[in-house]
Length: 110
Image (cartoon, rainbow, N blue to C red; front, top):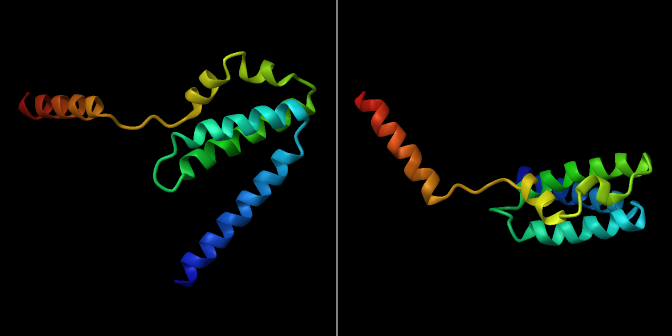
């Protein structure tokens, strides 16, 4: 129980640190990051750690680009949704499972 509590508190503190870093971004970066965060949460799986890791990487990329003086859309491109989609983990679909099953069955028979 103590490990779980420590983990939850640690995760919450980590999230708050990320949010503070995001709040320190220049205005355009802050706006795009906030909109991206809202968009990406739509695709979170389970406990959302997959999206948090993506947001952590995006935040680091935004911080570096902002420090270099790049406009935010030079980082993401004009299609911000495509930028997000390229970074989100792709869920396993029925088609993925069917393909894997087909290949496994053939591999065992040949």
